[in-house]
Image 1 (cartoon, one colour):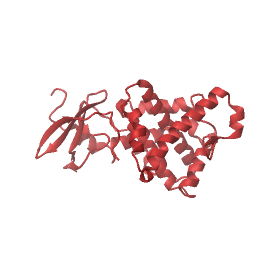
Image 2 (cartoon, helix red, strand yellow; image 1 turned 45 degrees about the vertical axis):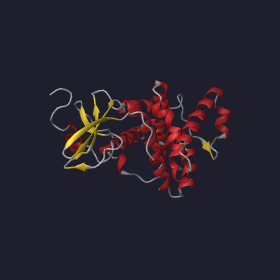
Image 3 (cartoon, one colour; image 1 turned 120 degrees about the horizontal axis):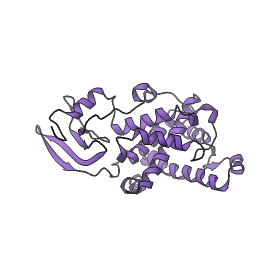
Image 4 (tube, helix red, strand yellow; image 1 turned 90 degrees about the vertical axis):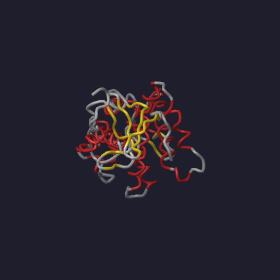
Length: 266
Protein backbone atom coordinates (compact mmCIF):
# COMPACT_ATOMS: atom_id res chain seq x y z
CA UNK A 1 0.00 0.00 0.00
CA UNK A 2 2.96 2.36 0.49
CA UNK A 3 2.73 5.53 2.55
CA UNK A 4 -0.78 6.41 1.46
CA UNK A 5 -3.16 3.52 1.00
CA UNK A 6 -6.41 3.46 -0.93
CA UNK A 7 -8.50 3.45 2.24
CA UNK A 8 -9.30 6.87 3.64
CA UNK A 9 -7.39 7.51 6.87
CA UNK A 10 -9.29 10.78 7.19
CA UNK A 11 -12.66 9.05 7.06
CA UNK A 12 -11.62 6.46 9.64
CA UNK A 13 -10.23 9.20 11.88
CA UNK A 14 -13.42 11.26 11.76
CA UNK A 15 -15.55 8.21 12.48
CA UNK A 16 -13.92 7.79 15.92
CA UNK A 17 -12.72 11.28 16.90
CA UNK A 18 -14.89 13.73 18.86
CA UNK A 19 -16.14 16.73 16.93
CA UNK A 20 -13.67 19.54 16.39
CA UNK A 21 -10.55 20.54 14.52
CA UNK A 22 -7.45 18.76 15.76
CA UNK A 23 -5.91 21.98 17.10
CA UNK A 24 -8.96 22.32 19.38
CA UNK A 25 -8.80 18.67 20.46
CA UNK A 26 -5.11 19.00 21.29
CA UNK A 27 -5.67 22.15 23.34
CA UNK A 28 -8.63 20.53 25.11
CA UNK A 29 -6.51 17.49 26.01
CA UNK A 30 -3.81 19.75 27.46
CA UNK A 31 -6.36 21.71 29.52
CA UNK A 32 -8.16 18.55 30.63
CA UNK A 33 -5.02 16.71 31.73
CA UNK A 34 -3.37 19.73 33.40
CA UNK A 35 -6.55 20.42 35.40
CA UNK A 36 -5.93 17.05 37.09
CA UNK A 37 -2.36 17.89 38.18
CA UNK A 38 -1.46 19.04 41.72
CA UNK A 39 -0.37 22.45 40.36
CA UNK A 40 -3.98 23.15 39.30
CA UNK A 41 -5.59 22.05 42.58
CA UNK A 42 -7.75 24.51 44.50
CA UNK A 43 -5.18 24.41 47.32
CA UNK A 44 -2.65 26.05 44.96
CA UNK A 45 -4.76 29.16 44.41
CA UNK A 46 -2.60 32.29 44.34
CA UNK A 47 0.71 30.45 44.05
CA UNK A 48 3.04 31.52 41.23
CA UNK A 49 3.66 29.30 38.22
CA UNK A 50 7.11 28.92 36.72
CA UNK A 51 9.75 26.26 36.21
CA UNK A 52 10.29 25.85 39.96
CA UNK A 53 6.58 26.10 40.80
CA UNK A 54 4.79 23.35 38.94
CA UNK A 55 5.23 24.56 35.39
CA UNK A 56 7.46 21.73 34.22
CA UNK A 57 5.00 18.88 34.97
CA UNK A 58 2.31 20.85 33.14
CA UNK A 59 4.61 21.58 30.19
CA UNK A 60 5.50 17.89 30.08
CA UNK A 61 1.81 17.13 29.66
CA UNK A 62 1.75 19.46 26.66
CA UNK A 63 4.73 17.70 25.12
CA UNK A 64 3.03 14.34 25.65
CA UNK A 65 -0.20 15.50 24.06
CA UNK A 66 1.77 16.79 21.05
CA UNK A 67 3.66 13.52 20.61
CA UNK A 68 2.10 12.99 17.15
CA UNK A 69 1.72 16.71 16.43
CA UNK A 70 5.03 18.30 17.36
CA UNK A 71 4.75 21.04 14.75
CA UNK A 72 1.36 22.10 16.17
CA UNK A 73 2.87 23.81 19.23
CA UNK A 74 2.03 27.36 18.13
CA UNK A 75 -1.53 26.50 17.11
CA UNK A 76 -2.13 24.81 20.47
CA UNK A 77 -0.70 27.76 22.44
CA UNK A 78 -2.93 30.15 20.52
CA UNK A 79 -6.01 27.96 20.85
CA UNK A 80 -5.51 27.57 24.60
CA UNK A 81 -5.57 31.36 24.87
CA UNK A 82 -8.76 31.41 22.80
CA UNK A 83 -10.30 28.95 25.28
CA UNK A 84 -9.17 31.14 28.19
CA UNK A 85 -10.79 34.18 26.58
CA UNK A 86 -14.04 32.24 26.04
CA UNK A 87 -14.01 31.09 29.67
CA UNK A 88 -13.69 34.69 30.89
CA UNK A 89 -16.69 35.63 28.74
CA UNK A 90 -18.78 33.18 30.76
CA UNK A 91 -17.57 34.31 34.18
CA UNK A 92 -20.19 35.48 36.66
CA UNK A 93 -18.62 38.91 37.12
CA UNK A 94 -18.09 39.66 33.45
CA UNK A 95 -15.00 39.32 31.28
CA UNK A 96 -12.78 41.93 32.92
CA UNK A 97 -13.60 40.93 36.50
CA UNK A 98 -13.03 37.28 35.70
CA UNK A 99 -9.70 38.16 34.09
CA UNK A 100 -8.67 39.73 37.39
CA UNK A 101 -9.72 36.57 39.22
CA UNK A 102 -7.81 34.45 36.71
CA UNK A 103 -4.61 36.43 37.22
CA UNK A 104 -5.00 36.32 40.99
CA UNK A 105 -5.05 32.53 40.74
CA UNK A 106 -1.34 32.66 39.81
CA UNK A 107 -0.37 35.48 42.18
CA UNK A 108 -0.91 38.62 40.11
CA UNK A 109 -2.81 41.82 40.83
CA UNK A 110 -4.29 44.12 38.15
CA UNK A 111 -1.60 45.47 35.90
CA UNK A 112 -0.64 42.66 35.99
CA UNK A 113 1.76 43.04 38.89
CA UNK A 114 3.10 40.29 41.10
CA UNK A 115 1.44 40.28 44.53
CA UNK A 116 3.58 42.21 47.08
CA UNK A 117 4.06 39.24 49.43
CA UNK A 118 5.30 37.14 46.52
CA UNK A 119 7.74 39.88 45.50
CA UNK A 120 9.16 39.76 49.01
CA UNK A 121 9.20 35.98 49.20
CA UNK A 122 10.68 35.04 45.85
CA UNK A 123 14.33 35.41 44.88
CA UNK A 124 15.18 37.93 42.19
CA UNK A 125 15.85 35.17 39.65
CA UNK A 126 12.57 33.35 40.30
CA UNK A 127 10.60 36.59 40.36
CA UNK A 128 12.07 37.51 36.99
CA UNK A 129 10.99 34.17 35.50
CA UNK A 130 7.48 34.44 36.99
CA UNK A 131 7.07 37.98 35.65
CA UNK A 132 8.54 37.04 32.26
CA UNK A 133 6.24 34.09 31.71
CA UNK A 134 3.16 36.08 32.71
CA UNK A 135 4.16 39.05 30.57
CA UNK A 136 4.85 37.05 27.43
CA UNK A 137 1.74 34.93 27.86
CA UNK A 138 -0.44 37.99 28.41
CA UNK A 139 0.92 39.65 25.27
CA UNK A 140 -0.32 36.65 23.32
CA UNK A 141 -3.60 36.60 25.23
CA UNK A 142 -4.29 40.26 24.45
CA UNK A 143 -3.57 39.73 20.76
CA UNK A 144 -6.07 36.86 20.68
CA UNK A 145 -8.77 38.43 22.82
CA UNK A 146 -8.71 41.94 21.36
CA UNK A 147 -8.66 41.16 17.63
CA UNK A 148 -11.94 42.98 17.10
CA UNK A 149 -10.38 46.20 18.45
CA UNK A 150 -7.11 45.90 16.53
CA UNK A 151 -6.89 48.24 13.56
CA UNK A 152 -3.64 46.64 12.39
CA UNK A 153 -2.45 43.09 12.07
CA UNK A 154 -1.20 42.54 15.60
CA UNK A 155 -2.27 38.94 15.96
CA UNK A 156 -0.39 37.90 12.85
CA UNK A 157 2.66 40.05 13.65
CA UNK A 158 2.87 38.87 17.25
CA UNK A 159 2.62 35.22 16.28
CA UNK A 160 4.92 35.36 13.27
CA UNK A 161 7.99 34.58 15.36
CA UNK A 162 6.31 31.72 17.22
CA UNK A 163 4.83 30.14 14.11
CA UNK A 164 7.73 30.49 11.71
CA UNK A 165 10.84 30.24 13.89
CA UNK A 166 12.35 26.71 13.66
CA UNK A 167 14.46 27.23 16.83
CA UNK A 168 13.55 24.39 19.27
CA UNK A 169 13.51 26.93 22.11
CA UNK A 170 10.52 28.60 20.48
CA UNK A 171 8.56 25.36 20.76
CA UNK A 172 9.58 25.04 24.43
CA UNK A 173 8.28 28.56 25.06
CA UNK A 174 4.98 27.68 23.38
CA UNK A 175 4.70 24.59 25.60
CA UNK A 176 5.22 26.78 28.69
CA UNK A 177 2.61 29.30 27.53
CA UNK A 178 0.06 26.54 26.94
CA UNK A 179 0.81 25.05 30.36
CA UNK A 180 0.54 28.43 32.14
CA UNK A 181 -2.88 29.19 30.64
CA UNK A 182 -4.09 25.65 31.31
CA UNK A 183 -3.05 25.90 34.98
CA UNK A 184 -5.16 29.05 35.30
CA UNK A 185 -8.13 27.34 33.68
CA UNK A 186 -7.66 24.34 35.96
CA UNK A 187 -7.55 26.45 39.11
CA UNK A 188 -10.66 28.38 38.07
CA UNK A 189 -12.51 25.15 37.38
CA UNK A 190 -11.32 23.32 40.50
CA UNK A 191 -12.43 26.27 42.62
CA UNK A 192 -15.86 26.22 40.92
CA UNK A 193 -15.40 29.77 39.65
CA UNK A 194 -16.27 29.00 36.03
CA UNK A 195 -18.82 26.73 34.45
CA UNK A 196 -17.68 23.36 33.19
CA UNK A 197 -17.76 22.46 29.53
CA UNK A 198 -17.55 19.37 27.38
CA UNK A 199 -13.77 19.63 27.02
CA UNK A 200 -13.35 18.42 30.60
CA UNK A 201 -15.09 15.12 29.90
CA UNK A 202 -13.16 11.89 29.37
CA UNK A 203 -14.01 12.03 25.66
CA UNK A 204 -11.56 14.94 25.32
CA UNK A 205 -8.95 13.71 27.80
CA UNK A 206 -6.66 12.40 25.05
CA UNK A 207 -6.35 13.47 21.42
CA UNK A 208 -7.55 10.87 18.92
CA UNK A 209 -4.66 8.72 17.71
CA UNK A 210 -3.53 8.60 14.12
CA UNK A 211 -2.66 4.93 13.69
CA UNK A 212 -1.00 4.86 10.27
CA UNK A 213 0.72 7.45 8.06
CA UNK A 214 -1.55 8.98 5.47
CA UNK A 215 -3.96 11.79 4.64
CA UNK A 216 -5.91 13.21 7.59
CA UNK A 217 -8.18 16.23 8.14
CA UNK A 218 -6.02 19.34 8.01
CA UNK A 219 -5.41 19.85 11.74
CA UNK A 220 -6.26 23.55 11.91
CA UNK A 221 -8.91 23.84 9.21
CA UNK A 222 -10.29 20.62 7.79
CA UNK A 223 -12.90 22.30 5.62
CA UNK A 224 -16.21 20.82 4.54
CA UNK A 225 -16.93 17.16 5.29
CA UNK A 226 -18.69 15.38 2.42
CA UNK A 227 -19.95 11.82 2.88
CA UNK A 228 -17.82 11.48 5.99
CA UNK A 229 -14.61 12.67 4.35
CA UNK A 230 -12.97 16.12 4.71
CA UNK A 231 -12.40 17.94 1.45
CA UNK A 232 -9.13 19.48 2.72
CA UNK A 233 -6.47 17.06 3.98
CA UNK A 234 -2.85 17.13 5.10
CA UNK A 235 -0.27 14.33 5.02
CA UNK A 236 0.95 12.91 8.33
CA UNK A 237 4.14 10.84 7.94
CA UNK A 238 3.89 8.79 11.13
CA UNK A 239 5.98 11.24 13.17
CA UNK A 240 4.59 14.69 12.41
CA UNK A 241 2.56 16.75 9.96
CA UNK A 242 4.11 17.55 6.61
CA UNK A 243 3.62 20.48 4.23
CA UNK A 244 1.74 18.28 1.72
CA UNK A 245 -1.97 19.09 1.36
CA UNK A 246 -4.70 18.04 -1.03
CA UNK A 247 -8.17 19.27 -2.01
CA UNK A 248 -11.10 17.42 -3.51
CA UNK A 249 -11.88 18.96 -6.91
CA UNK A 250 -14.64 17.48 -9.11
CA UNK A 251 -14.28 14.02 -7.62
CA UNK A 252 -10.47 13.82 -7.68
CA UNK A 253 -7.66 15.13 -5.49
CA UNK A 254 -5.41 18.08 -6.35
CA UNK A 255 -2.20 18.01 -4.31
CA UNK A 256 -0.30 21.13 -3.27
CA UNK A 257 2.03 22.38 -0.54
CA UNK A 258 1.28 24.71 2.38
CA UNK A 259 3.76 25.15 5.21
CA UNK A 260 2.75 24.02 8.67
CA UNK A 261 4.73 26.95 10.06
CA UNK A 262 2.17 29.49 8.88
CA UNK A 263 0.60 32.43 10.65
CA UNK A 264 -3.12 32.08 11.41
CA UNK A 265 -5.63 33.66 9.06
CA UNK A 266 -7.82 36.23 10.82
